Length: 159
Image (cartoon, rainbow, N blue to C red; front, side):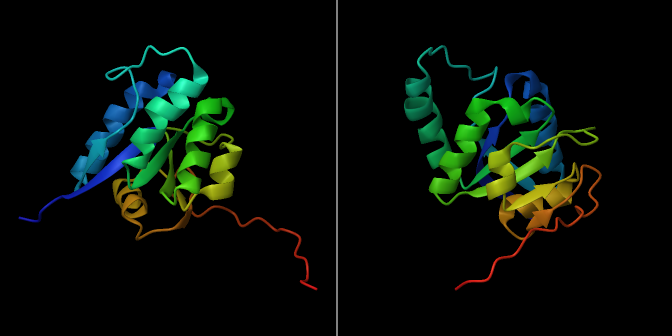
């Protein structure tokens, strides 16, 4: 029997997507990865009101304890100031940053910080998510798991 991998993961999401976290953990478990979940959700809520306190005393230590920040991508994610802050914090602390399209998501805008800093964005496929969390897959996928269409960007010459 193959021993399951274990990773410390913080899942950045909006509270309306709490139900998807249970599905995500089950999918990972089915595909050989157990996560120690450091996320803040309805099963481990905080009642703090101060944004500074929430960021520095609750979120920062949880993200610091993790190997990977997973961003659960749904239509409301892109507008969350906390999701954006969590991504920026993870980037500053050299965390693996993985976007995972929400189960059943057909496509929506991703948070700008995720587009700027993601090591991988993957569809709802267990092996792809596990590979992205463990760092063996990088790159970007559409929600259905197909490769993302390349974006043409203007190149500048160094002087």
